[in-house]
Length: 260
Ligand code: PEP
View (cartoon, helix red, strand yellow):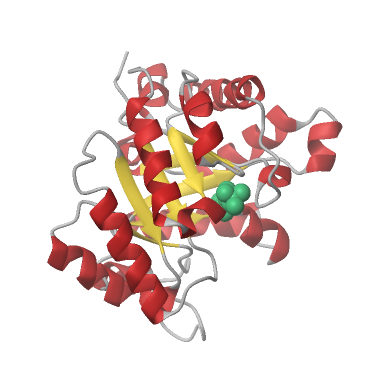
């Protein structure tokens, strides 16, 4: 079986300012300077990307710079949008696509998210495709169906050759920012099912190599248990990523998870 290196991302959402973002990025880089057994990314707000990219590069940090969104268009008359090429220019390596706040608060549909994923990959960025069910969908027993639909739609037309640059983040919407976390068993079941969908879409080998992060109120106290599940390959962290010591503890928990 392919070894999957754990991967932890910190989604800062619309938090920090120039000074506190630089301070947080520096503290994360310092705290994780010697943590080489996990891939780590931070996703600051757009205006701070270039500055934080420079800061990380000047420190020689292995922490990757990520963006929270990307346009599906390469350029032109799209006021307010930010293209993959612009992000790349700022030192960005990876981008979130389909975070639940973009799906459910801003209302981005599957077809747009698929176009964004393709634009990001074509522009040289890696992609973290976020999927997950709402509380109503979970209570209706539709978790696997929703994850399958969002994964198939989000990945439509993306060839197997690009899949090493794609990570899936399974984030049950009801667990994001609420303090509620899926039980390790529930999360593992959802991840295993998502991997079966990937095997069907591609091959078992491709599916076995794709990292699937868990997201939803992960904190230092619950990270180790979640990350010890065989199909959970790290996490996408919101609230706890705003405190460098908590984020570092979560990254260390991912590094310490039993090897796959
Ligand atoms: C997220 O924003 O992707 C997230 C999982 O947030 P939180 O960790 O705060 O639930």
